[in-house]
Image 1 (cartoon, helix red, strand yellow):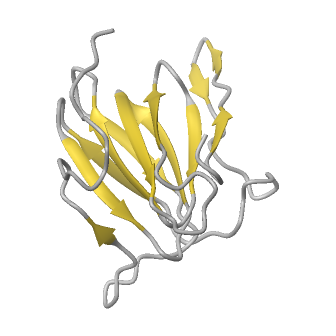
Image 2 (image 1 turned 45 degrees about the vertical axis):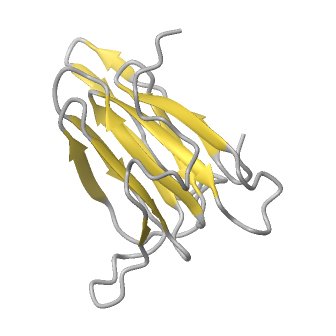
Length: 151
């Protein structure tokens, strides 16, 4: 596991009316502070990658469809520098994924319809000076293949 990344299993509570699922609470150990809440989506097969933040920690929950989320640790001072990790999250695997500052991340929709991630980052988006540092989705600088892996 990449240093600082945490996976929290979420617990949907179904009944005859539907379901309820707490995604993030301010009294949980992983809660640092509140920046904002936003929704990001991808169409089937679309990759949105790579970027990292210098200040911001992200907290992803996929609320519709399924996403393959990939991480790459490029932090110079990290004990897991150079490691990659992938997580399959969404309706069939309800988890919250904590992505610390400095870790490149991206995602690919692996469901047959649009997939949606709700993010609760620790910082509000700064339109004048965004805390985003990007690389292309299919760069050679990150040792990761977005293709489907038939094992």
